[in-house]
Image (tube, rainbow, N blue to C red; front, side):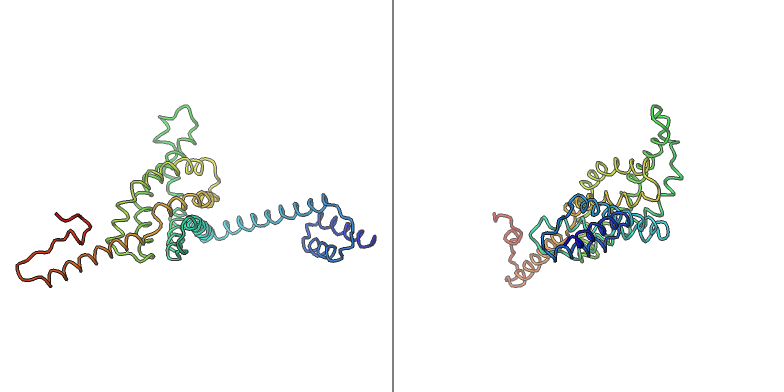
Length: 281
């Protein structure tokens, strides 16, 4: 028993120094399986596990930054797609309905496309906006702040209303299978409320992004912030089912009215109030 205890202590010490988690797990399981009251040092074990977790996180971070350096576009698109799917899943979990896969797919596809657009457009925005417009009005602040605000406004007042939302409503409607008429109705009802929320949420976030985040990490930073935004977007305008349902209901009402008219004698009229939900007069 003393020999086994000594071996366990030795293995824990080696694992702590070398971060060899396999050895740590193997001997921890072995010690638990023996079950003869072998003494152990909880502090040492917790220390080893903590160091191992930090090492794993460090390796994941290095792997991700290496992927960003070697494959920036695909890495940014994958990051955005994964986090957008997660944000939509959180939003869908608030309802009792079954998980809507086309809705999740539409958010993933849209976010991946938008991250690709950001990858291309951000260098152009940064090169074009470097404080020359707002600098004279922000003299108490460094020029970098004026540049960051210009870049933020170029994104929020240029790309977002004229590219972001048109593509969002068109792409999500197509994937979720709603008609063009319903897609336009959905956009008309949701654009202004979403735009207001968009400006309140994204102007501070993008100011931090352009002003303080390294260029290589800007889109991953936005993807993480986008996890919260996708939740807001998904709750506000995620599902298109209601628009299809209302359009189908209108079509059924129109068919019923037309059928009733055909069944009426020549010259008589049919009140549409009974089909539209309005009270008869």
